[in-house]
Image (cartoon, rainbow, N blue to C red; front, side):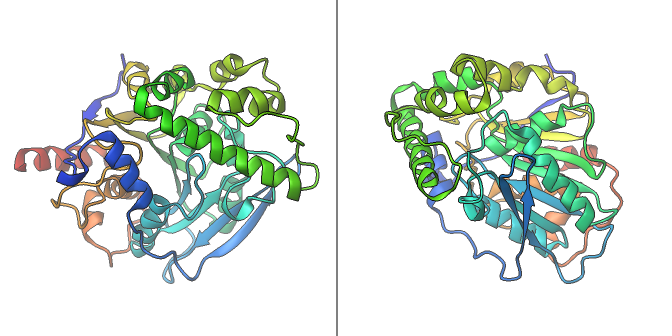
Length: 359
């Protein structure tokens, strides 16, 4: 049992989007605002020669010492994923300098890496965090990870040594137990997601093998039908694991969550058809880690009814509140956030309780 609170979110789904599948699909297909036109790209070379791409959106009034945030997308996503673009725009409007990371083989970095990101590569986040420290000296950094990006964020946060500019974290729908994810994806309608991810990832691997010098040749391998097939054929040999079970065992971060020391919020939905919530509810959390769970929300969905938030994207405002440490900031698009980085969780929780009583 966790020593820190498990909170129940006051999310109420939009009536036509009740249910985990509808929420999940809404997250994929609902329109998002255009990305910012002032984005600057930074290429980051990893020790093995692969490159990541960091997309830098800096507000005009931002100064060194002001807040920064790094957003890390999920599996088969990129810096252009709808939830990433939405949250970037909202943070930018509130004076936060936002860095959107493309993981190995994703987005603008699709052909800049020989291999693909997996749950065992949390240290890939360190070089971009260090680059942000150089670009924004003295600025506190929040890292927000989504799905796979959330698992990588949590995993890196468990390390005993971390970049000093990293002051808080948030993970949304993170797969912290890969065995449990596999079991959930094996249920009836959920198998469509398993097949979708396996197909998408394999197509990218095939394209990379033909276009990137040094990329693994996979022409002799059968096309995987499930994520486990993909992991056995591709992730395991490249990562040096014995088999898929060994990979799942070594990279599932659930049993290490108690090691996290920086203020961390985890958001998850009970009806997520891709990532189960039970491992999070059963995990021992650190004293500064909080699990905010909802009955509905799907996977990265959380499209809700009109309420106290400026729009229907309940998830966006919880991320922003956590990063800014101030629930009032969701209502002040023209207010530059204070650089005082003291954690105001009690105030945030108080607002949540007021919202619950109001509804």
